Figure: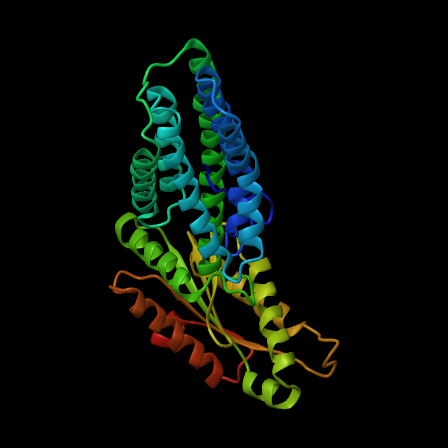
Amino acid sequence: MHLPEPRSTAPVAPVTRASFYRLVYPARVLGMALAGLAVGSVLFEHRAGAWLWALLGVTFLLWPHIAYVHARFSPDRYAAEKRNLLIDSLFVGIWVPLMHFNLLASAVLIIITTFDKVYTLIRRLWLYALIVLIGAVALVTLLVHPEVQPHSTLLVELCVLPLVFVYTWVNTYRGARLMRTTARQNWQLSELRRTDSQTGLHSRDHWIERATQALQSVQSEDRPASLLLIDIDHFKFVNDTFGHTVGDEVISAVGTVILASVRSEDSAGRYGGDEFSVLVSHADANTARAMAERIRAQIEQLRFASAPQLRLSSSIGLAVALPEHAALRDWINAADVALYRAKDLGRNRVVDAAAVST
Protein backbone atom coordinates (compact mmCIF):
# COMPACT_ATOMS: atom_id res chain seq x y z
CA MET A 1 0.00 0.00 0.00
CA HIS A 2 1.93 2.96 -1.26
CA LEU A 3 2.19 5.89 -3.56
CA PRO A 4 5.80 6.44 -4.60
CA GLU A 5 6.96 10.02 -4.61
CA PRO A 6 10.19 11.72 -5.56
CA ARG A 7 11.79 13.65 -2.74
CA SER A 8 11.09 17.37 -3.06
CA THR A 9 14.61 18.72 -2.83
CA ALA A 10 16.60 21.26 -4.77
CA PRO A 11 17.99 20.44 -7.17
CA VAL A 12 15.33 17.88 -7.93
CA ALA A 13 16.66 14.36 -8.06
CA PRO A 14 14.94 12.30 -10.73
CA VAL A 15 13.10 9.14 -9.73
CA THR A 16 15.16 6.18 -10.89
CA ARG A 17 14.37 2.50 -11.06
CA ALA A 18 17.13 1.79 -8.55
CA SER A 19 15.65 4.19 -5.97
CA PHE A 20 12.02 3.18 -6.48
CA TYR A 21 11.97 0.76 -3.53
CA ARG A 22 13.11 3.50 -1.14
CA LEU A 23 10.22 5.72 -2.20
CA VAL A 24 7.69 2.95 -1.61
CA TYR A 25 9.00 1.96 1.83
CA PRO A 26 7.56 4.74 4.07
CA ALA A 27 4.11 4.51 2.50
CA ARG A 28 4.12 0.73 2.81
CA VAL A 29 4.95 0.97 6.51
CA LEU A 30 2.11 3.43 7.11
CA GLY A 31 -0.43 1.66 4.91
CA MET A 32 0.27 -1.78 6.32
CA ALA A 33 0.12 -0.53 9.91
CA LEU A 34 -3.29 1.08 9.36
CA ALA A 35 -4.52 -1.99 7.48
CA GLY A 36 -3.33 -4.13 10.38
CA LEU A 37 -5.43 -2.04 12.76
CA ALA A 38 -8.53 -2.68 10.63
CA VAL A 39 -7.85 -6.40 10.33
CA GLY A 40 -7.01 -6.63 14.03
CA SER A 41 -10.41 -5.21 14.97
CA VAL A 42 -12.09 -7.95 12.95
CA LEU A 43 -9.92 -10.62 14.58
CA PHE A 44 -10.76 -9.22 18.00
CA GLU A 45 -14.49 -9.38 17.28
CA HIS A 46 -14.13 -13.00 16.12
CA ARG A 47 -11.91 -13.98 19.08
CA ALA A 48 -9.27 -15.24 16.68
CA GLY A 49 -6.61 -17.73 17.67
CA ALA A 50 -2.97 -16.95 18.39
CA TRP A 51 -1.79 -18.12 14.96
CA LEU A 52 -3.93 -15.47 13.23
CA TRP A 53 -2.52 -12.74 15.48
CA ALA A 54 0.98 -13.96 14.71
CA LEU A 55 0.20 -13.90 10.99
CA LEU A 56 -1.16 -10.36 11.39
CA GLY A 57 2.12 -9.26 12.99
CA VAL A 58 4.17 -10.80 10.19
CA THR A 59 1.95 -9.38 7.45
CA PHE A 60 1.35 -5.83 8.61
CA LEU A 61 4.30 -5.05 10.88
CA LEU A 62 7.21 -7.19 9.73
CA TRP A 63 6.56 -7.52 5.98
CA PRO A 64 7.25 -3.85 5.02
CA HIS A 65 10.79 -4.16 6.42
CA ILE A 66 11.34 -7.56 4.80
CA ALA A 67 10.23 -6.07 1.47
CA TYR A 68 12.69 -3.20 1.87
CA VAL A 69 15.62 -5.49 2.61
CA HIS A 70 14.62 -7.84 -0.21
CA ALA A 71 14.62 -5.00 -2.75
CA ARG A 72 17.74 -3.31 -1.39
CA PHE A 73 19.94 -6.37 -1.72
CA SER A 74 18.44 -7.65 -4.94
CA PRO A 75 20.54 -7.44 -8.14
CA ASP A 76 17.55 -5.83 -9.87
CA ARG A 77 15.95 -3.58 -7.26
CA TYR A 78 13.18 -2.35 -9.53
CA ALA A 79 12.06 -5.88 -10.45
CA ALA A 80 12.25 -6.90 -6.79
CA GLU A 81 10.02 -4.01 -5.76
CA LYS A 82 7.46 -4.90 -8.42
CA ARG A 83 7.36 -8.39 -6.90
CA ASN A 84 6.89 -6.80 -3.48
CA LEU A 85 3.92 -4.85 -4.80
CA LEU A 86 2.30 -8.07 -5.99
CA ILE A 87 2.99 -9.69 -2.60
CA ASP A 88 1.17 -6.76 -0.94
CA SER A 89 -1.93 -7.71 -2.92
CA LEU A 90 -1.36 -11.39 -2.17
CA PHE A 91 -1.51 -10.65 1.56
CA VAL A 92 -4.72 -8.66 1.18
CA GLY A 93 -6.24 -11.57 -0.75
CA ILE A 94 -5.25 -13.96 2.03
CA TRP A 95 -6.81 -11.81 4.73
CA VAL A 96 -10.19 -11.30 3.06
CA PRO A 97 -11.41 -14.88 3.78
CA LEU A 98 -9.53 -14.97 7.09
CA MET A 99 -11.71 -11.97 8.14
CA HIS A 100 -14.75 -14.04 7.17
CA PHE A 101 -15.38 -11.64 4.29
CA ASN A 102 -16.10 -8.70 6.57
CA LEU A 103 -17.59 -6.40 3.97
CA LEU A 104 -16.29 -3.03 5.15
CA ALA A 105 -12.72 -4.05 5.98
CA SER A 106 -12.37 -6.26 2.89
CA ALA A 107 -13.74 -3.66 0.48
CA VAL A 108 -11.51 -0.89 1.84
CA LEU A 109 -8.37 -3.06 1.72
CA ILE A 110 -9.07 -4.25 -1.83
CA ILE A 111 -9.86 -0.76 -3.15
CA ILE A 112 -6.86 0.92 -1.56
CA THR A 113 -4.33 -1.73 -2.51
CA THR A 114 -5.60 -1.78 -6.11
CA PHE A 115 -5.54 2.00 -6.49
CA ASP A 116 -2.03 2.06 -5.03
CA LYS A 117 -0.88 -0.01 -7.99
CA VAL A 118 -2.48 2.47 -10.37
CA TYR A 119 -0.57 5.31 -8.68
CA THR A 120 2.78 3.63 -9.36
CA LEU A 121 2.19 4.21 -13.12
CA ILE A 122 3.67 0.77 -13.83
CA ARG A 123 1.83 -0.53 -16.84
CA ARG A 124 -0.85 -3.13 -16.02
CA LEU A 125 0.52 -3.67 -12.51
CA TRP A 126 -2.91 -3.02 -11.02
CA LEU A 127 -4.39 -5.74 -13.23
CA TYR A 128 -1.75 -8.34 -12.33
CA ALA A 129 -2.09 -7.40 -8.65
CA LEU A 130 -5.87 -7.79 -8.81
CA ILE A 131 -5.49 -11.23 -10.39
CA VAL A 132 -3.07 -12.24 -7.62
CA LEU A 133 -5.48 -10.90 -4.98
CA ILE A 134 -8.50 -12.75 -6.39
CA GLY A 135 -6.46 -15.93 -6.71
CA ALA A 136 -5.38 -15.68 -3.07
CA VAL A 137 -8.99 -15.15 -1.97
CA ALA A 138 -10.12 -18.22 -3.90
CA LEU A 139 -7.26 -20.45 -2.68
CA VAL A 140 -7.59 -19.54 1.01
CA THR A 141 -11.37 -19.91 0.81
CA LEU A 142 -10.96 -23.45 -0.55
CA LEU A 143 -8.46 -24.32 2.17
CA VAL A 144 -10.12 -22.73 5.20
CA HIS A 145 -13.83 -22.73 4.30
CA PRO A 146 -14.54 -19.62 6.40
CA GLU A 147 -18.02 -18.76 7.55
CA VAL A 148 -19.18 -15.63 5.72
CA GLN A 149 -19.88 -12.83 8.22
CA PRO A 150 -20.04 -9.58 6.23
CA HIS A 151 -21.45 -7.31 8.95
CA SER A 152 -19.26 -4.84 10.82
CA THR A 153 -19.41 -3.77 14.43
CA LEU A 154 -18.82 -0.23 15.65
CA LEU A 155 -15.29 -1.22 16.69
CA VAL A 156 -14.46 -2.41 13.17
CA GLU A 157 -15.91 0.74 11.65
CA LEU A 158 -13.83 2.93 13.98
CA CYS A 159 -10.65 0.98 13.22
CA VAL A 160 -11.21 1.14 9.46
CA LEU A 161 -11.63 4.93 9.54
CA PRO A 162 -7.89 5.73 9.96
CA LEU A 163 -7.12 3.64 6.89
CA VAL A 164 -9.77 5.46 4.89
CA PHE A 165 -9.07 9.01 6.01
CA VAL A 166 -5.48 9.17 7.27
CA TYR A 167 -3.95 7.04 4.54
CA THR A 168 -6.08 8.68 1.85
CA TRP A 169 -5.11 12.15 3.07
CA VAL A 170 -1.42 11.22 3.20
CA ASN A 171 -1.58 9.78 -0.31
CA THR A 172 -3.38 12.88 -1.57
CA TYR A 173 -0.68 15.07 -0.05
CA ARG A 174 2.06 12.87 -1.47
CA GLY A 175 0.32 12.85 -4.84
CA ALA A 176 0.20 16.63 -4.87
CA ARG A 177 3.92 16.78 -4.07
CA LEU A 178 4.57 14.22 -6.78
CA MET A 179 2.72 16.38 -9.31
CA ARG A 180 4.66 19.48 -8.28
CA THR A 181 7.95 17.61 -8.43
CA THR A 182 7.10 16.13 -11.82
CA ALA A 183 6.14 19.57 -13.13
CA ARG A 184 9.43 20.97 -11.82
CA GLN A 185 11.39 18.15 -13.42
CA ASN A 186 9.58 18.68 -16.72
CA TRP A 187 10.39 22.38 -16.56
CA GLN A 188 14.06 21.60 -15.90
CA LEU A 189 14.15 19.17 -18.82
CA SER A 190 12.51 21.79 -21.01
CA GLU A 191 15.14 24.31 -19.93
CA LEU A 192 17.89 21.84 -20.78
CA ARG A 193 16.45 21.37 -24.25
CA ARG A 194 16.16 25.12 -24.74
CA THR A 195 19.63 26.04 -23.45
CA ASP A 196 23.08 25.45 -24.88
CA SER A 197 25.03 23.95 -21.97
CA GLN A 198 28.40 25.42 -22.99
CA THR A 199 27.33 29.05 -23.28
CA GLY A 200 24.04 29.42 -21.41
CA LEU A 201 22.47 30.86 -24.54
CA HIS A 202 19.35 29.48 -26.20
CA SER A 203 19.81 26.32 -28.21
CA ARG A 204 19.60 26.61 -31.98
CA ASP A 205 16.11 25.09 -32.18
CA HIS A 206 14.70 27.29 -29.43
CA TRP A 207 16.26 30.42 -30.89
CA ILE A 208 14.78 29.61 -34.32
CA GLU A 209 11.38 29.21 -32.67
CA ARG A 210 11.69 32.63 -31.01
CA ALA A 211 12.95 34.28 -34.21
CA THR A 212 10.08 32.79 -36.21
CA GLN A 213 7.57 34.24 -33.75
CA ALA A 214 9.30 37.63 -33.94
CA LEU A 215 9.13 37.63 -37.75
CA GLN A 216 5.43 36.82 -37.60
CA SER A 217 4.94 39.79 -35.25
CA VAL A 218 6.80 42.02 -37.68
CA GLN A 219 4.52 40.94 -40.50
CA SER A 220 1.23 41.04 -38.59
CA GLU A 221 1.76 43.89 -36.11
CA ASP A 222 4.42 45.95 -37.86
CA ARG A 223 6.80 45.65 -34.90
CA PRO A 224 10.46 46.28 -35.81
CA ALA A 225 13.03 43.61 -35.11
CA SER A 226 16.64 43.03 -36.07
CA LEU A 227 18.84 40.00 -36.32
CA LEU A 228 22.57 39.67 -35.61
CA LEU A 229 24.78 36.83 -36.79
CA ILE A 230 28.09 36.81 -34.91
CA ASP A 231 31.11 34.78 -35.99
CA ILE A 232 34.43 34.48 -34.12
CA ASP A 233 37.19 35.41 -36.53
CA HIS A 234 39.79 32.72 -37.29
CA PHE A 235 38.34 30.32 -34.73
CA LYS A 236 39.91 27.33 -36.49
CA PHE A 237 43.30 28.98 -35.96
CA VAL A 238 42.50 29.30 -32.24
CA ASN A 239 41.72 25.59 -32.00
CA ASP A 240 44.73 24.55 -34.07
CA THR A 241 47.16 26.81 -32.21
CA PHE A 242 45.96 26.76 -28.61
CA GLY A 243 44.00 23.53 -28.50
CA HIS A 244 40.35 22.64 -28.16
CA THR A 245 40.32 23.30 -24.41
CA VAL A 246 41.12 26.96 -25.04
CA GLY A 247 38.65 26.88 -27.93
CA ASP A 248 35.94 25.78 -25.51
CA GLU A 249 36.91 28.61 -23.16
CA VAL A 250 36.59 31.06 -26.03
CA ILE A 251 33.12 29.81 -26.96
CA SER A 252 32.00 30.05 -23.34
CA ALA A 253 33.47 33.53 -22.87
CA VAL A 254 31.90 34.89 -26.05
CA GLY A 255 28.57 33.43 -24.98
CA THR A 256 28.90 35.24 -21.64
CA VAL A 257 29.65 38.53 -23.42
CA ILE A 258 26.61 38.18 -25.66
CA LEU A 259 24.32 37.16 -22.79
CA ALA A 260 25.42 40.20 -20.78
CA SER A 261 24.85 42.53 -23.75
CA VAL A 262 21.29 41.67 -24.71
CA ARG A 263 18.11 43.01 -23.13
CA SER A 264 15.49 40.92 -21.37
CA GLU A 265 13.19 41.05 -24.40
CA ASP A 266 15.93 39.89 -26.78
CA SER A 267 16.91 36.32 -27.55
CA ALA A 268 20.52 35.21 -27.89
CA GLY A 269 21.38 31.74 -29.15
CA ARG A 270 24.24 29.57 -30.27
CA TYR A 271 23.52 29.08 -33.93
CA GLY A 272 26.23 26.47 -34.43
CA GLY A 273 29.94 25.94 -33.76
CA ASP A 274 31.54 29.37 -33.36
CA GLU A 275 28.54 31.24 -34.75
CA PHE A 276 26.01 33.02 -32.55
CA SER A 277 22.69 34.70 -33.25
CA VAL A 278 20.81 37.49 -31.51
CA LEU A 279 17.19 38.47 -32.04
CA VAL A 280 16.91 42.15 -31.14
CA SER A 281 13.21 42.65 -30.46
CA HIS A 282 11.34 45.92 -31.08
CA ALA A 283 14.52 47.56 -32.36
CA ASP A 284 15.51 49.40 -35.49
CA ALA A 285 18.88 49.22 -37.23
CA ASN A 286 20.47 51.91 -35.04
CA THR A 287 19.59 50.15 -31.78
CA ALA A 288 20.73 46.77 -33.15
CA ARG A 289 23.97 48.24 -34.49
CA ALA A 290 24.78 49.81 -31.12
CA MET A 291 24.32 46.41 -29.47
CA ALA A 292 26.41 44.70 -32.16
CA GLU A 293 29.25 47.22 -31.75
CA ARG A 294 29.17 46.73 -27.98
CA ILE A 295 29.41 42.96 -28.39
CA ARG A 296 32.24 43.28 -30.94
CA ALA A 297 34.23 45.63 -28.68
CA GLN A 298 33.82 43.40 -25.61
CA ILE A 299 34.89 40.29 -27.54
CA GLU A 300 37.98 42.18 -28.65
CA GLN A 301 38.84 42.89 -25.01
CA LEU A 302 38.61 39.27 -23.85
CA ARG A 303 41.77 37.79 -22.31
CA PHE A 304 42.50 34.22 -21.26
CA ALA A 305 44.88 33.12 -18.50
CA SER A 306 45.57 29.84 -20.31
CA ALA A 307 46.55 31.71 -23.49
CA PRO A 308 47.69 35.25 -22.58
CA GLN A 309 48.80 36.09 -26.11
CA LEU A 310 45.44 35.20 -27.65
CA ARG A 311 43.48 38.09 -29.12
CA LEU A 312 39.98 37.68 -30.46
CA SER A 313 37.81 39.57 -32.89
CA SER A 314 34.42 38.97 -34.42
CA SER A 315 32.48 39.68 -37.57
CA ILE A 316 28.81 40.58 -37.25
CA GLY A 317 26.08 40.68 -39.85
CA LEU A 318 22.98 42.75 -39.11
CA ALA A 319 19.61 42.52 -40.84
CA VAL A 320 16.41 44.37 -40.05
CA ALA A 321 13.24 42.33 -40.66
CA LEU A 322 11.62 43.45 -43.91
CA PRO A 323 8.25 42.73 -45.56
CA GLU A 324 10.02 40.75 -48.28
CA HIS A 325 11.31 38.28 -45.70
CA ALA A 326 8.56 35.73 -46.26
CA ALA A 327 10.25 33.13 -44.06
CA LEU A 328 12.88 33.08 -41.35
CA ARG A 329 15.32 31.61 -43.86
CA ASP A 330 15.15 34.82 -45.90
CA TRP A 331 15.89 36.96 -42.86
CA ILE A 332 18.82 34.77 -41.78
CA ASN A 333 20.20 34.75 -45.31
CA ALA A 334 20.19 38.56 -45.32
CA ALA A 335 22.18 38.64 -42.07
CA ASP A 336 24.47 35.92 -43.39
CA VAL A 337 25.29 37.93 -46.52
CA ALA A 338 26.13 40.91 -44.29
CA LEU A 339 28.31 38.68 -42.10
CA TYR A 340 30.37 37.46 -45.06
CA ARG A 341 30.65 41.02 -46.30
CA ALA A 342 32.16 41.92 -42.91
CA LYS A 343 34.70 39.13 -43.38
CA ASP A 344 35.52 40.28 -46.90
CA LEU A 345 36.18 43.79 -45.62
CA GLY A 346 38.80 42.54 -43.16
CA ARG A 347 36.76 41.16 -40.25
CA ASN A 348 36.31 42.70 -36.76
CA ARG A 349 33.42 44.86 -37.89
CA VAL A 350 29.64 45.12 -38.10
CA VAL A 351 27.95 45.26 -41.51
CA ASP A 352 24.28 46.07 -42.11
CA ALA A 353 22.48 44.02 -44.75
CA ALA A 354 20.93 47.25 -46.05
CA ALA A 355 24.41 48.54 -46.94
CA VAL A 356 25.23 45.34 -48.80
CA SER A 357 22.10 45.47 -50.95
CA THR A 358 22.59 49.11 -51.97
